[in-house]
Image (cartoon, rainbow, N blue to C red):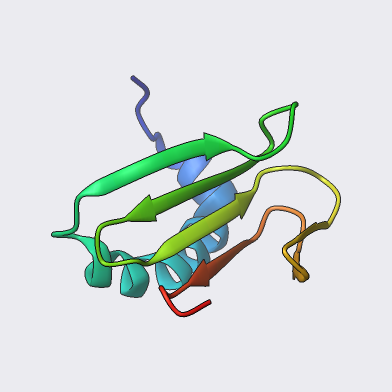
Length: 86
């Protein structure tokens, strides 16, 4: 567990706000879904995929280089959101 002090907030405020704006709208769509699976896509665990009962999926790239997943580019430190028809 960690706490957020004022210095850390000041240093990363815009990163936190952008992360919130990027992720929260999508989380509202899966908030009541069952998490069906979570897996490591790459051996170094830097790319991870999660699937929900609604058929929605998210693939996250925690790495420092872009990654191609099923023909779609995931920017470094980025993610893609997929619906069941993708």
